[in-house]
Image (cartoon, rainbow, N blue to C red; front, side, top):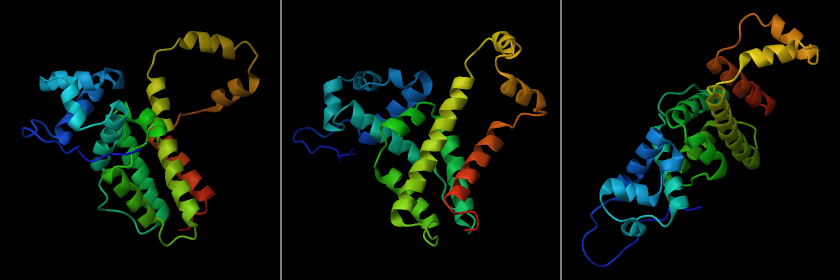
Length: 215
């Protein structure tokens, strides 16, 4: 994976900037979904041909890496607790917010992660949070990777739950007697956890599991 620098070329001064191209791609994805993004679609928005964009980006894959790196600039790393676990929880909260704003981001984060400057700044801040912990270098990197993957998976699950389903069919299945433990457990649920609380409990449980409960 690479976020290669813009290609140097002879001839007239470039009409566009890489930042302009990436911003248009992000806007298209936000409005219409990642399926709507292509070099041709971005070029159409710019009023030019797709071939003219290859001096700025190498391929569609390169464009999606740049898009992920672009939204990684939305983190605010200014105010954090002194405790590593609380710092990482705040980073995870912001990751969820960013991925919720950009619904196309979770699946790309899981399959085509970026290593651009903003993404590297995210890793740098995460490692700073873990600097004084007892985790090894490998464990620190694994922890950050898992936090990102857990958050992406959580947001994808939230997105899928927004799709309609037939609640009456589920109720019939539960009352059939085929799922007694599930039925009994659901009957005892007094008030379902809201998404934010559920997310934070999962992140805290993971951080405690890797030994950051008191750090």
